[in-house]
Image (tube, one colour):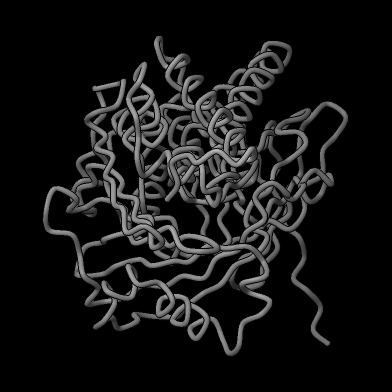
Length: 427
């Protein structure tokens, strides 16, 4: 048996970033630009396939700070809003981002994630971060003072060690540090799974909805349909575990059976041809009990993951990266101040996820579906909902609180009436 190669002496840096997705690349770019020695370690080689192609308008501000907006514009399709379609009633409604409460950001893009993520990783590299691809971190040990020793295996089997003064974990659904510390907890309020793939020859919208993400509400879940460049449509079905447990055949058979069962989706996929593999994933939503500790912080999906019905994943990742970069840099000079920043960042991210979870956890509720499909704008309720769909849930803006509080109050009033047998709006 061949002995493993000897472990090299640790390579030192100020901050080690685990993972090269949107969160890790954003944090690494920002910190390297501030003159910090940053090493980014990613288990994959880019470009690589990833789901989650629909972005939100609030991403644009971060793209501007990174200087990548023009590159994202060039590789994606223009996204002016979101469309909801109901199989049961046949209703359709489109929410234009231009009608939100914050009129500074009124569009975004649908992007092939392989190209998008590679763009962000290249930005981190060009900003001065040391980027190591095909390098999987498999162990992180922290000393009493918070300094870390990381061990990683390269694609050629070589073991490398790194010594860092702070660690940003952007390892995605691997949740490296959350698993190490036993912090990851399934979100039972949003107990769902997904099956998805890319297709050609899917009917695209050509009217004012052109470029919109489509959310098709079906009996026991929902579909996403995301238009991408090159006549590609990303199509996915999200439902509870029962829909997957009772399936016959593989993931492709499951997805196509669900497509056939939805009149609105089937009509758009009459001539559809799959491009690549149909993939399934379970345990879709989770949180972590703590998002930071002595010498480390969790970013993006390593912090928590939500059902993607409102396309929040990339924005949460990149926004958490901006917060994490500030915490990491401050830690190097003033750990006490960094702890205060980390607590604030943790609260801000959890509050944003709670706002989204309230909606996501009710996406199959007839009352909420009725409100989405027949939106009223009393006290700007509809405009407030559009602002949530645009990603402004992460940012404090005057005037947002009342419309969203009104929306929730209306939901509880209608839900209570429905339980009493009073007829209300329904999909």
